[in-house]
Image (cartoon, rainbow, N blue to C red; front, side, top):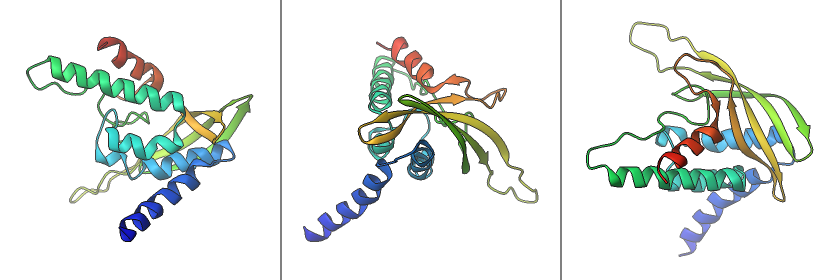
Length: 182
């Protein structure tokens, strides 16, 4: 029992530290520190386990919206007898389907209880045999909300303009999933 409790505390302590972001740039870095190890776990709307890991770095509004969208997706899957692909596929937290493998937080503009931070992102594909892989580079904007626990990621604005990437805002995509599967 003591070993289990120690393991839980070791996992919880870094998450709690990440959750106390005092400035918007630190909050964005905290998000990517948690998310970089999770987005390979599954694509589309994060499952309950990944949402639990992301919860400390996301705003209450975005946490609720992700849970509601996941429930809407589950209702659609239950209704349709044949295999249904997820409504949202790929990395929903960036413009690129594969998601970033590296990030650098740029400038943040703060106004009242919201902030917007530009983030330079890149994706380096795994090396293919006999070829040199080139990274994809783009910039997205993270929208943050001031909460009693510090700054939290509240939305993503997809700024890359990829032909087949995410466009608009994360919150709009999640609202589309929720509205299509009430």
